[in-house]
Image 1 (tube, rainbow, N blue to C red):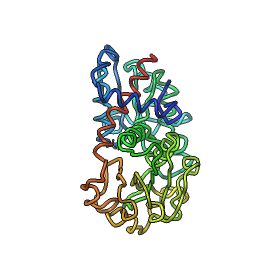
Image 2 (cartoon, rainbow, N blue to C red):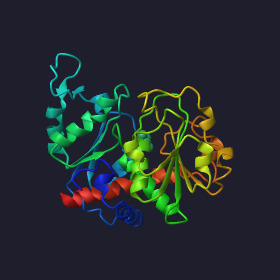
Image 3 (cartoon, protein in one colour):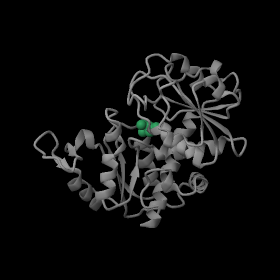
Length: 315
Ligand code: CP
């Protein structure tokens, strides 16, 4: 593993999940591995789980960890190679990234899409330029297209709670009031398929994900049909990919409630958090016995730790 930007960097998903579960069992076994190493966590956007779990994972490996809220506290960064910087941006990423690469042995970067232009977002300018110019391994803490640390935590959670080797996993769209990125849904789909699970994606018409991420899954616009016999139900909103960034006007009937789960009585319910209660998921599902959302959030530590460990072992 040179960088950790997506499922391709994981290699064998099952083996990485095994490694994360071993760390969960014995969290202090590698406390010396990161001694005298530093981890920089650069955030262009808000975070609770990714920030805290990555910090904890780094500390468990013995690293010093710095969290940099670049959007709030740093100089305004420029990412356009051809920019004439006579506007609001103060420092070019080509100058800033190598500086950070001298201070840190590993760099994590979070950068959300603007959801204005599909082409711009798909260029992943922030992540790509950190990879190009930092000179140290870069870990995606969520980019425009993917959220691989979340997906690894999700795969750990499924492994822990599955009752059969190839469970039926349903990723179901949920309502939301704001345009939400595709990263969690894209990533969950590609990791679930890479893990060899049976994946169904359910969403309203006009809200199909980029097919590059769902190739090999069943895609349907009928939530009820999708949920029938599900072992895991992953609830997530995303804005339209087709009408890029558009919010669904309506769709309240897609909110997951106990009634939605009538034909999937044993299903475990997942969500990456943060969640809008009684918009995406009803509170009685979130607070009920089927919810695995806290288990997912807890597993974020072991996911980050497994990835940092691999990168430290390589350096
Ligand atoms: N799931 C997740 O990434 O949470 P945060 O945005 O709080 O980090």
